[in-house]
Amino acid sequence: MSDKCPYCDGTTEEHAADCGTLLPPIEGTINLIEEADDLNKEPQP
Amino acid sequence: MTVTYTTAVKTPRMQVMADLVASRTISAATGTATAGQLVIGTGALSGGTGVLATIALPATAFTVSGTVATLQGVPLSATASATGTAALAEFRNNAATTVISGLTVGTSGSDINLNSTSITSGQTVTITAGTITHG
Picture 1 (tube, chains in turn blue, brown):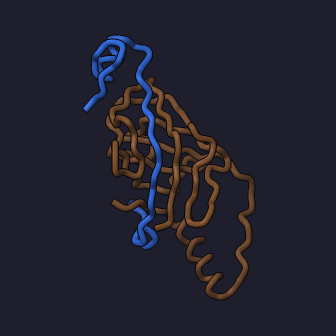
Picture 2: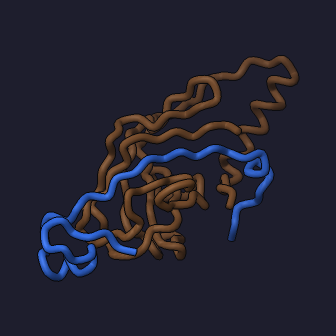
């Protein structure tokens, strides 16, 4: 699901075509809590 | 889904455990720190496939206190290089070798939570804070 662009009221995908600039920023945080199993899990190929 | 550590991470961790059980002293890491990266991608993220945004990390990306590693230099931003739905992320080193993979990306309850997982090429992607906690 896309967010609405505050400038052209389109979704972020539509915005890229309609506005081309001023894309609303994506912001986020990392909150990784290790689980005990992580230490025993083999890397995936 | 649990994250996956490479053997290059797991072996030293096990060595630290073994040394502490044997009452040995843990020494500081050696070598020059170089900047790694956080790669946010689609569910197909693998190497260069599915990459949506690559966020450069500080040379010393984390400081550790107690059981929590805290991301340094925040906010950290990058310009999205492709359009898609973010689902997975990886920490990679300076040589772009994956160190931790399988981090989930969503809007809540994930390892990385964004205000939107719909990323468009050219859009700014910013990480405002980050912690890794030993469970």
